[in-house]
Length: 325
Image (tube, rainbow, N blue to C red; front, side):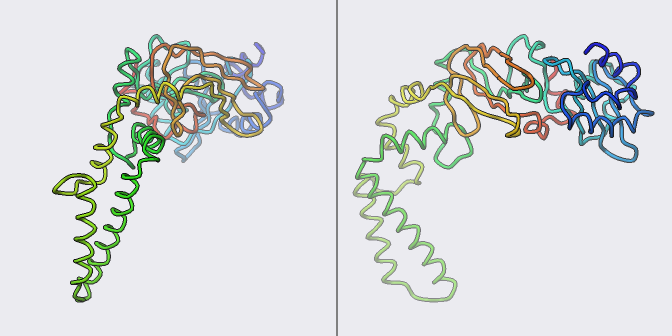
């Protein structure tokens, strides 16, 4: 495919009749549209940019490293940010990567750092959410209890842990049901207060429920629901780290369009769309066009896999100012 690469860099209009130069048919037709903007095209590193007139969109053409064929992507963004003559070439390339949804190619990575989005093959990448110097530090981080219902990977793990170990706790079950009744009573009282209804009987029932909860907990004042969970799990928290380690498994996950997905094989703990990596390992990614690619995750970490489209919304043009290695 060397001829195709030369055409891209030196005579791209000839690519209009060479569909076999492109990664797939959709890339070919997208490329034909991009080439209609040839007059304003510019080469940035290994890429060729085709700005669209009067639009905050542009096309990018480049050579796929696994197949040697040409890929074409339509980017939603202002091309002037990339084509600014006042910035260095390496900065332009980095900004272009950010537009495409990643910060590094896998061969550029020296060490894993929080915030990196590393392209492994084609349009598939891994986002490094957090790294740790040791397994103990990772487990200590996960062991912090942020509360139930909080948008945090630790909350999800703790909720599963609580369900597993406290599901047979009859006392907690009673407390949960009484707390739900208490919530309903408070809601009724607010409504009644607004419309001026007296509620002596409701108040008596509320006090009975509160007293029952206080007796079950052995406290004088009812704590918040999350605090009640904490009081319970403090007795079994030593089992939490073991719980995480025992959840580790061989994962096989598919990403991308169903007609040509990337298959990811990794050993870890799947929590929502994130994976907790407990040990150093090689991640294996397989694709029918890109073949088999590997990437080493060298430290305990929390990561997320996905296509570049999944990550393009978090790699802003200025993201490079935060992460540039």
